[in-house]
Image 1 (cartoon, one colour):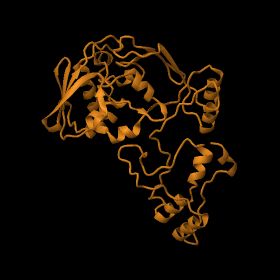
Image 2 (tube, rainbow, N blue to C red; image 1 turned 90 degrees about the vertical axis):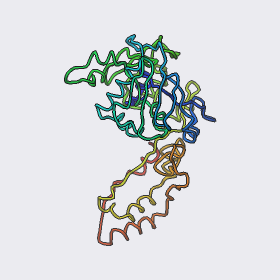
Image 3 (cartoon, rainbow, N blue to C red; image 1 turned 120 degrees about the vertical axis):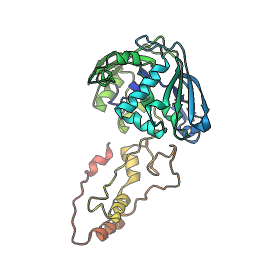
Image 4 (cartoon, helix red, strand yellow; image 1 turned 180 degrees about the vertical axis):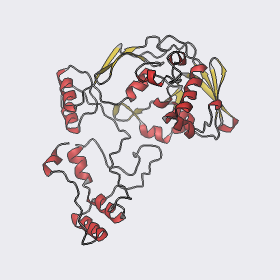
Amino acid sequence: MFGKEVYDHIFNLNDRLTRWKQIPAPGEPGGFDLAWQASNFDEITEPRMAEGWEVTNGGRTYTFSLRKGWPSHAGNEFTAADVKWTFDRSFALHGITSFYNTLSTIERPEDVKVLDKHTVRIELAEPGPDLLLTMSTFWRVIADSKLAKSHATSGDPWAKRWLKNHDAGFGPFKLDDLSPGRHVVWVAHKEHPFPPKLDRITFREVPESANRLALLMTGEAQAAQYLLPAEMQQVSSSADLRLWNFQGYVIASCPMNPKYPPLDDVRVRQALSYATPYAQILEKVYRGIAGPAHGPLSDHAAGSTPTCAPTPTTPNGRASFCGRQAMGTGSRRRWPTAPRSRSESP
């Protein structure tokens, strides 16, 4: 009962060289302490597909020792060749993993070297923490190169088309069935070094959140994601269901294009910001499951600026005055608004 989010699938069908430490969040059963992660990023990484690593050359050289005997879903042993092929592929396809190469200052495919069957060396142009941090993300999953290459063609040398709908991973679950727009079925990868506790999981595509809630309430589904705030309240008030939520990184924002009149005038943008009823939105729309933003990053994310204060809501008179002053008395603009009755429900 999940939406179109793919992160769950990438994480569980695949695996990474490293992972982030999972520190339980205070007062959030099942959640992780993201604030601790943000303030301790130099201590956050722990081994996963790699048994360990050595940092030399002033922080510019990372040598990873890989776990032995880790089979892929196709039964192929995990080796340094898989790591090398995955990095080579990231450079060749120029996707988001190529961005992470740049972020980590891995400049060329040749900077990733196979030393032996279970040892890989990565050379950085500059020292920094980003290599280990990004290696733990779902963008850095390692592919079964032997399987993927068997499906490569002259027109598709990196098996991009085949991998779009097939599984070539080392993760705790294997792809059992995929029907785009209908369902995805995982089965446990029993030979995984850290095997999952569930044998089978079926994800059904149910576009409407109300229908997801109905299936959850009747017991036809055991979990549902991306419910509306009012629907979450229904779950929390049910004696048979449990609402699992925790603080995340998502920020709801309304960016303005300063090149588009009248938004090219900072006073108009300020007027719109001042007139936004932040407190009412939190109360009436989000029903208490969200808080005010203090800048472009969540207040518990690395790099956030807690000294930034949310824009105060001012009386309509000031916002209106700011707008008139910026646009002039002879200028008229029509702004889209929502009916008042809609403010009571998300």
